[in-house]
Image (cartoon, rainbow, N blue to C red; front, side):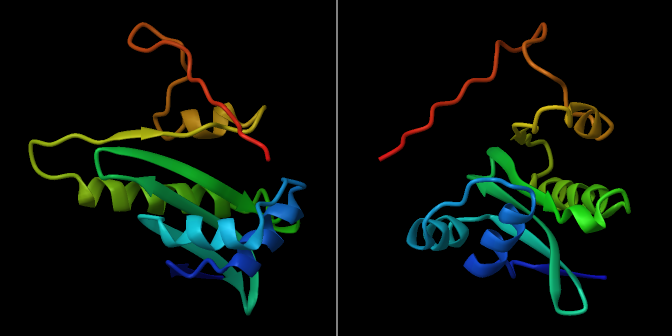
Length: 137
């Protein structure tokens, strides 16, 4: 298994999202989105892409997104290692005496996976509900 930094292509992105039955974005939108990633990881078994994850944000507010492991490779610690490496990147980028806010939207039923890394569900005493809007054209 090999982890490659900033190596997610539109093909890999679409293949892995399809493997978990997530809707894909069109090719142009995907390419633009990937080019705006702060950091990303692609995971390979030989030449086969089997996992990915990426960070978008501005260094203050950061979103972990597109964490995907092909179902044939789940329950082998790959997702855990992706998150561990993404968080390591963000910790290294946070300056001394600085702080970074890290958000994500867990897939339904995957909240416990992220809680073991220190993520908290919202609402809680410090935060209201997370919210989102999707625009379709």
